[in-house]
Length: 210
Image (tube, rainbow, N blue to C red):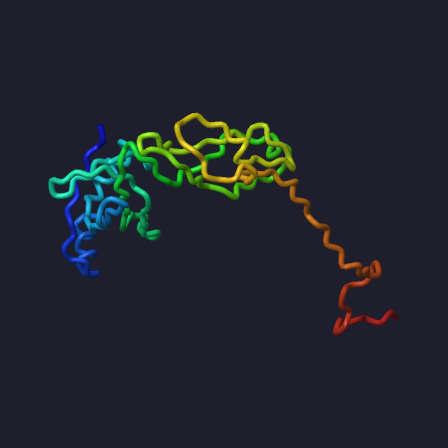
């Protein structure tokens, strides 16, 4: 059973109306999808936070808009980076039996053997596009890098996962690699100074020997 999140339709779309919603503890949002008309709504910030905690970032939510319920998933959100607050969210209307494309976080687990030897871990991919029915979307996909040595790479083909979904990436795409240890270059100007003489003698006072 999906967790119910209450929402209300937004009639006023001006910037001043959005500010009023946020000032009153709400978050402007929009519902969209192939089988529904795009609709502007707003939800309680507190209720949204609790719902995400209950169902997860990719869980199915029963969005109740003024008495009309629609299954949705949270596909995107905008955040105020200064206040660290969500200021807008996008809900995709879904059918639980139909597959959709979503992005899921890729998490590297374990400490790579190459890092223990001084190598540097690089992770060029942090999210994976997958195809799945809404109820089978994982919260995250984990990739074990424990055995990764210096100079080795981990690709999509190396990711072992269980679940009823498909990863929409080429198998040879690199998701992690261990670079060789960084070597500090010795800086040598090539200039030599005579021993026993200061760098600059100009202007120094001297006392003649009697």
